[in-house]
Image (cartoon, rainbow, N blue to C red; front, side, top):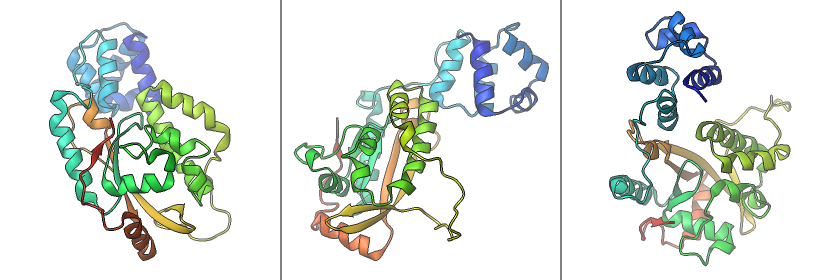
Length: 272
């Protein structure tokens, strides 16, 4: 695709008219029009201003730069590279400090990267087939979530929670340009109802908990997703830390019983 094609696609995807994009990028609508028609070639500074105005991820900014004939600006080193050592240490520290709450780190494809001790205990209880693995967890979270013997098997409110997971998966697939995530979307599209207005008149809770079947009782968890602020690398920007917080006192007690007093005693484990 040419730069004109990529720019037009990104502007349409962002839902911005040419005038609004021009104002955000501190240029004229005429210049945007000429860029999208291919009549002018942008400077590197203009490409970066357009990317900022479009709120593109760092990986998509690289794509826009390459389409304009410039080298990528933002690094995308592998998580296990030497340059990512500080990031790995920060992730490990965060996960360890989340204990006794289960917490994990995943990359842009939802591949599980690290998990703390409580999270590994929870995975071992929910997915016994993974308990023999030193990682005690599935390699790809989204694949595990949607497979019949994965999360959907032990989730008591699957019909409520699935549309929200689906929206997250759809957003990530659109942003990542991932064939792996696109395949998951295509495979499970017919299984999810689009969330609509509530029809029973009951008030919606402030947070929708994840309700798990665990040992014949319910474990109710709230999910908190955090990302690193001001990243200068696509790898750091795309890494997510997800923490599961007990939604009530009973769930806190069940988690503590599951850990058997071991929560927080061992450091977070790298899964690959």
